[in-house]
Length: 143
Image (cartoon, rainbow, N blue to C red; front, top):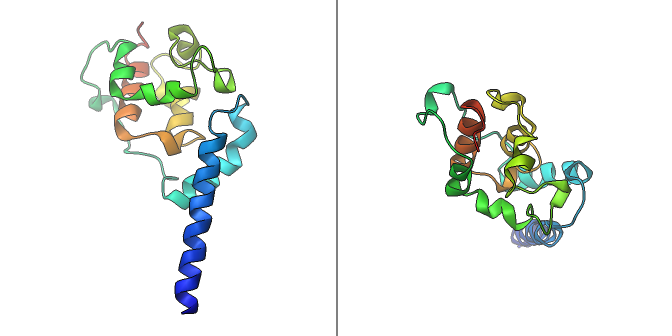
């Protein structure tokens, strides 16, 4: 009986952590302010490890456009990172804002890719978004 009670307690704790992260998700603050708590939540939810390792050969489009990021699913990012609510000072809908967070042709050294691949935004990311951002940066971060 005690084991069943412990499982319920752990389940309720994880649910409470998840709900609190949703309620706090769109506050206008620097992501570095909540880096540790997001990493802990990612660990609890099982999404702390980096996504599928990508290589140059994964990128078949010779010059992906900025719009390919939205097609891959980054529209979910714009819930918090848009012109009216630039959470962490970042508007994902603006080419210039996104372009300022990348090192052209070098995704692994680009802040945007680092944040979504293994940083604070990892828990909201998936392989489709990861690949689109990686390839867009690698192939020139075109408008």
